[in-house]
Image (spheres, rainbow, N blue to C red):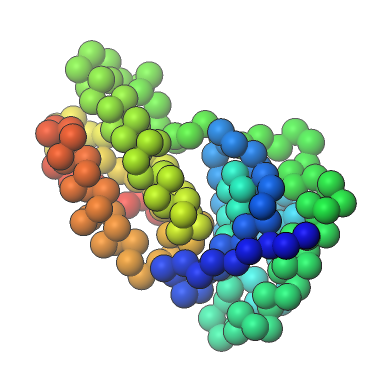
Amino acid sequence: MFIQTEDTPNPASMKFLPGQPVLGEGKMGMDFPSRDSAAMAPMAEALFDIDGVDSIFLGADFVTVTKTDGTEWHHIKPAILGTIADYLTAGLPVLSEGAETKDLTAGSPDQYEGETKEIVEQIIELINTRVRPAVANDGGDIIFHRFEEDTGLVYLTMRGACAGCPSSTITLKNGIENLLKHYVPEVNAVEAVM
């Protein structure tokens, strides 16, 4: 199995593309910021066994690994490649039975009414069609949390390589905020939720 690797804007994260589904299309990525959080994901647990792995993000067709400070990629990259290849080639489960990926948003338009619900639906549609694919190209994901009608604030969470990326604030403010403000005039600003 050939696994392509890509650098991400976050120098501590690398994207691994095995050329086949990891979670599968239409499924939201899963973020594992620690070994304890990976209890329902055998492949993520195995990746955490590699000394120097700090966090893991599983996408539809990629795996993003973030390394610890002081760890060099050339020391851990071969073990990461081997672990991913072993799991996918052998057909081992990436997730344990019963583990589920969540909906594409943490916040739902059903929490809102009337015109505000329509605004939230527009925001979520823009995130899913314009923002999420671009962020996935960089080895990450973005989650909509909520919209505050009275302030015009949109709250989002960056995950995967984007979570600790030095340029994530620029992405949120100059990219996503400008896009949402352009298409949804009720949006005044975008804020990150940790």
